[in-house]
Length: 244
Image (tube, rainbow, N blue to C red; front, side, top):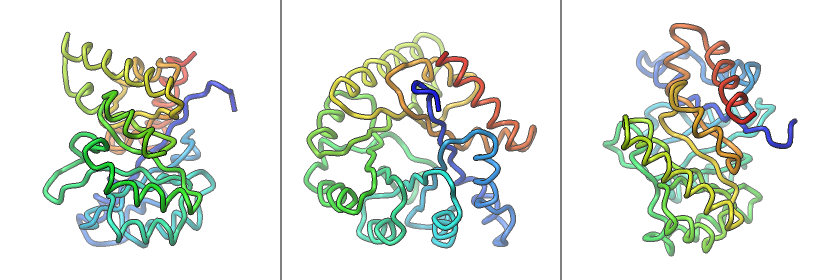
């Protein structure tokens, strides 16, 4: 692997969303994970929500058994999710905020405001040898709190950047860039994700301090028109081109 290669984690949640719309076994997110790896994914991300609206416990078990690349287990900071993570011991666990009524993750985790509550989960995951990541907004206050908690990785929320246009989008991109640089200077491994598409990925991928992007919903949607492998391969090409 090239030393400066930007890793791509593919989130397969919404393959399970389509499956669950009918309550049957097809399409299989585990099969999608295999295709993603073949197309150039360096890891697979799956978010087991408390209401099990897409990924299921059985999906996590199957992914843990068959994946040949790292599994990034997105989870709320709850005792139930901690028990599941400790049972399966994925390569990584990314703590994210979760509201039952939200359609998708809305913003980053308030690490600064929830420091004492989160410490139990971060410490337990680290003791189990699981790489801990915190999904946060681009904020130096949140990055300082992540360092204080001892989490080795933070993932910067790119959703606002992807939804904005014009000058506000460029301002948000600069906010992300400064946060990535600041976190990297503090010794954190920096990741980014949420909402990234072909039109928005290149400026983010070009940030040399980033080690990984996690992308899901756009790729699953694009697969309807061009196939999953082709969609992921195009995202991989754009990331490599930006990083080069």
